Length: 410
Image 1 (cartoon, rainbow, N blue to C red):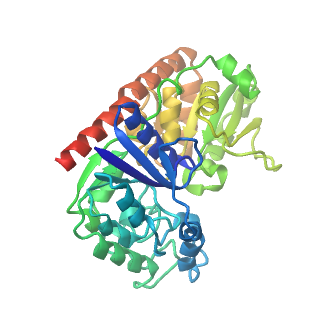
Image 2 (spheres, rainbow, N blue to C red):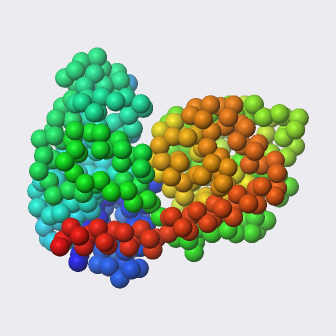
Image 3 (spheres, rainbow, N blue to C red):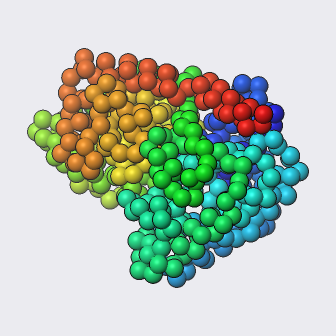
């Protein structure tokens, strides 16, 4: 059985890495898998770079749909209107299953899906598939109707771009041979609430990591490799767009750190930021900060998690971020708000702490609770690794997908 994974990239971004990890897990399970991408960043010979001129222009031209909505950032909203050349390439490869992942930036047009004429599995890495164009709704529920008057477009008109995109999806995706997969239970509930997908099967299969790479590493060695202090407790934050993305909640982490007693923690606590380099602008904190930059390889990422005493993911809205799965696999307790897919990963006061939604005081309490007792911290670390191995291994993920593919083909 041949499966073709389609993703805008194979390594650029959390969704792309999750897709590539699944692809490699299937190959390791002796399954026939290929991957079609626009931006190939790996040296993986089973990944095919689809780079005709039309694909290279897609990203910029797709953004033109937003020219009448200047207040909407193009990286948070996708129209997917520009014609692609993927259908002919898929027919050449002739897979038995087409597995879609994150295909935005003008890579795959909405109207292309019915043309595949194959069973389609679609892993949802955010909310775009069932909205009128936004990647995350920011608590708006208009997608459960037909969108329109979109707050992210700053629009008051019902028949705006979001309504047009929603209606294009409703028309094109009416009778697909489609199965949806979501990494988190929360996203499955959101997808099932959409009229676009009410007729389709939704499965929950979480993302995975390589447990032989993401594993507990000697903390002193990890800090030495990253030039981090040995005598401090380190709080780690990291996300694809780091501190600039308000959805990822760095502003809440700053506020929580400011609420910690500087007299008690000032001489023993420091902050490390993954994915960003120093801007020259000092953070408003009494603690020192370390910028680790954008680490592109798994080994360096594993070292950064292992070097930390706690990983904080204070997202406002999120699916099942790789960063938390990776941190848990490295035995690092995690702290997050009780939102989205976080409860699928963090068991409150077992392998980390779930703070009340957007409650900065509780976020600060959770940080202290994890860090203040060494015996408790050791227990949390053991449980973090145990949770990752039991729930997020690549072997489990590949087995579940192979079973799903077999069911669909048969």
